[in-house]
Length: 193
Image (cartoon, rainbow, N blue to C red):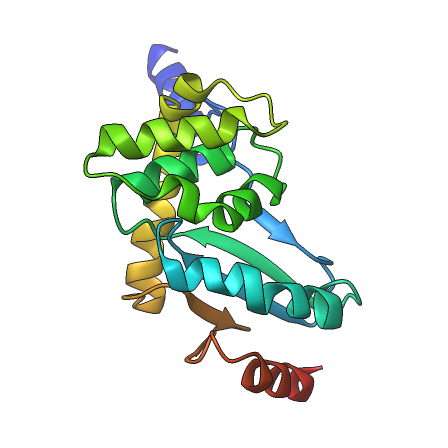
């Protein structure tokens, strides 16, 4: 009887994973039914990524995401500790909402400065305090489940898509090389929908 009980326990743990912590929600915008799925790998300290959020994303949203043709998933690919900490802040509420992420990119020049990580963290904390997000900065930085989620996204990006730089767009599973040229991106997306 003990042997049968042990076997059942082993089967349960092997085939039915036990949820030990809340699942981290990815940051996604757009319809689940969108014909075109974009994944963007980005780093919060990357100026080209901030440029994408300021200059490319608004047109992409208006022309494709809001119309239900495209969905976009924002994936973490931190290039340094400051970007890693920014990603933790962006995911802290774990609501899948992109508002904090966009805010951090929009205000990147205000917090991505300083000669030490301590300076950068202080700037990041100050910019968050000026917002209406009501986040506990230190608590957000110390959430191990979010840290694991961010690092896992970065590892998967490197392995699956061979990501080496940010921003990198993956459109329906294929790398799109020119994320900074909206005309080319728009033309490419129009062919897919």
